[in-house]
Length: 439
Image (tube, rainbow, N blue to C red; front, side):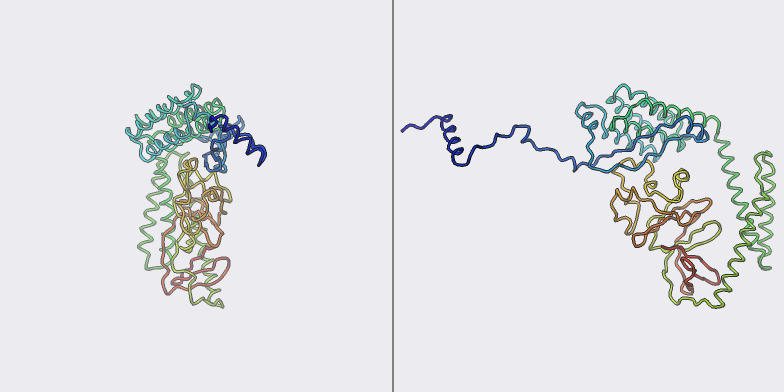
């Protein structure tokens, strides 16, 4: 018996299967059988768009060197960016290219030298070659600032680096998110004009003199406080005389300044002495209250703390509640009100997902998810008039922020005792009291 050919055999088998099990569904096409890429596994760095300032906003912010609007937090992950896919297929400028440019800027920010400037300009030229022609004007503005830093590294200021930061962010919004390039170019162009104007009107000599006058004013206030302190005991009279002599020399120095630049030393002196006298009365009153009936606790609630100076008052903060301690940057003043957004700690690098906020924190707060930390804003518990240090407190899923002038680690001695009083209590050390700030 001869076997059927392959084609007839396949047809016969198919008919037999149909008779037994019913008709088989149509075969899936090649496109349907391909593996579909799961977009939910992607984490894309998507930024909120910059809002271009109106004429009214420009008039209100003429005093600022750069008035870039605040860019909000990173959007939720798992979003598909069609513009990014299209650009990647066409071989144009991509987000990966912009992250390489940002990495070159990080080296420039670490140290402005001709070498780091050259590396940044090289990365800028490589990105420009891939970019669309309508983006070239923005690249030209960035190249102008990069060339200026390369030729004058000793004159580099944070404003120039901030301009480069915002330029890369604008490119990210245009390239990855399909925003129009013209408004961002005009915004950067105006910002660069303000930078050039500011660099001409404020010479290094003038900046040095302003810094020196500010430092002398701080010294004047310190000597006022020391003179008041040494006047309280006859044994420290020689020290008081030294402070009085230093105050007279500072007053003579200020008198050499032009009339319009001389500070009001009389008002400063009255303000400092009023604070010191109020402080003296408050301490005396609390000591009397303790002597009359307050029972000091036999055990301290904590042994390690940070001494924080806020408006001439020294507070103690438990060390185990401090999740972050670092310098307060001048640019943060306009971005906080009654709350402190944690994403400020990242600075410009908040726009890039490979820089983690949790790496800057310690304790239970560092265990939270990165996206949750970037959205978190904590209330400001205490705030100095001239903050220099930021302390972030976290305890039992509650947090707060202290903006202090100084903060130093401190081990509480054995002879100290704690009085549970008010919100945080008071710790007494050798007849000196330290209010406690804790959650």
